[in-house]
Picture 1 (cartoon, rainbow, N blue to C red):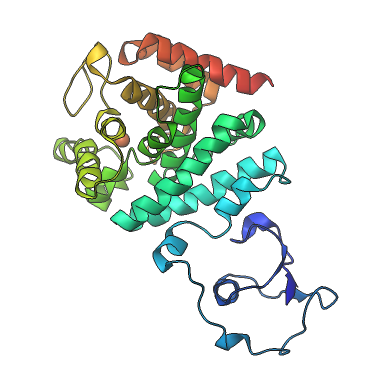
Picture 2: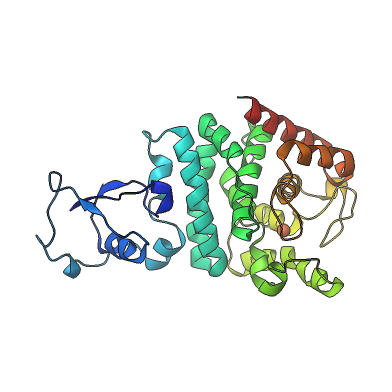
Length: 315
Ligand SMILES: [Fe+2]
């Protein structure tokens, strides 16, 4: 049957409000949603009880892939008719769901499914400047690790695109996965520390500082991502002046991919609401990074980041 969901597409987990039911999983999803009613368009499909849908076999897509990557995300990325602003909103929204699912269950299979989808997001960002522009302007700013992972992923891929536009020497798909998965190691940190609504004790900070190593280990154990991309996960808290962690390396010892992620990571932390601080507006965050934290970053990478955000703001 052809159905019409009487609400905004942003308030449910389907890509469109009007569509043909083709699988049992769509019906299950409607039942699980908070929708109180749907309309059936009998001019475009069958009416209620015309067929016994309950006996329909399950779809052949592996269950874990379905679970971790929201239905419709990849279809939407490829949809040439979807307007850039809507596409950007949808990619943001569904990527958050995807990362939430992954962080709840970071298995090798789920990591693989997310990497496949991130590759498509990378292709979208690299080839579609309009959608990239909207993506840079709609980052959301709550406290959750999954939101942060998506923001840092999008910002870092955009920055890598700006830095490496004229070079073929970088595997942008692997880079994208490294950026999206940079905080994967937080899944091995006590969640009471991750969600603590206040300052961490010294002991809690020590545990928190282990997350880059944990993330590197997960990706090594599950044999996911190439070596350079794992380095993103390991080095995203290293600082140019050697004041970072876990290794305290500095300058050129920090991999260029780690430097990119570090700038995006700090920017997103500043512009996000945390239990102990309000969000800081984008321009103010960049000013703080320049005036008070410049020694943390590779100068060229930071300057390119400022130019990228300034260009996105203007257009
Ligand atoms: Fe981190």
